[in-house]
Length: 162
Image (tube, rainbow, N blue to C red):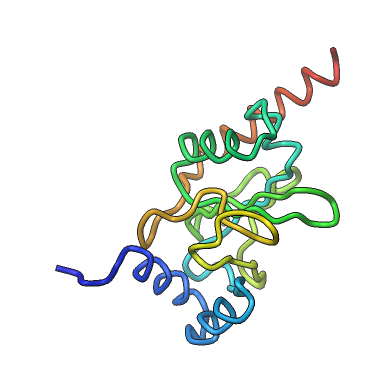
């Protein structure tokens, strides 16, 4: 039986994405966010706040967290960039090889680093987990992310033509 707490096991799994896992742990300790290279353990689909909020028909943080958790069933990071709120759905790294939504929701992988918050960082300010990983290896299903993107596009088009 594994004696690690779930958060420790998840933190270890995330840290292993970094070529020097101890550096990720140091960044989490000092800054609350570690820059992890994508494409080794997972990839990330960058979703604009407008797209996510349209798909969910809400921008209320508690609603967004609850609905994303149920629909994507995997970890999602929130970051507030200069262009507004941005969400990152973590998916299997190999799904990015055939990702067909790169114009509206690019899949970030090889040669890209993502700011990944410490596992207990679950609210603003700064980068935080909207939906934290539940266990090591927990990732969103790519099809669930595609369905969310499609729903967001439909709502944005419907709203623009109303």
